[in-house]
Figure 1 (cartoon, rainbow, N blue to C red):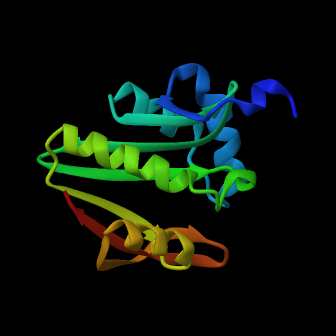
Figure 2 (figure 1 turned 90 degrees about the horizontal axis):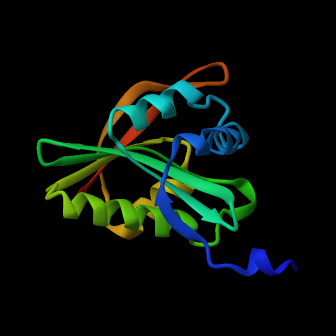
Length: 153
């Protein structure tokens, strides 16, 4: 193993220079990915955008907005080869901490109804299912419902 790969992964602010790597992970993980423009607009709008990086390699990211005492996690993803190792939870905990620092009282997120692994992670952290959005996400052969989840901070 190369010594640089032994570095501890870090969570840091997403930069415009990170967008190619972020979009590459997005396309690897999602059938209906966000565009480079979605991520660029999030940076330009001052959203809380973070990446997980090890030795210059970005393998995860997330985007959250905060307003009116509410935080909304818009996206969070971990590259396929890094999943099921606790990185999604570490990144989620970072966003929860940011929301608390900005005095948000509640954090919301949407998750595909079919993404039970993510829903279980969110429930383990303390999120609860509060509603369902019918046909929220594009899906193969149509649309898919979203589960709206809430965490009281």
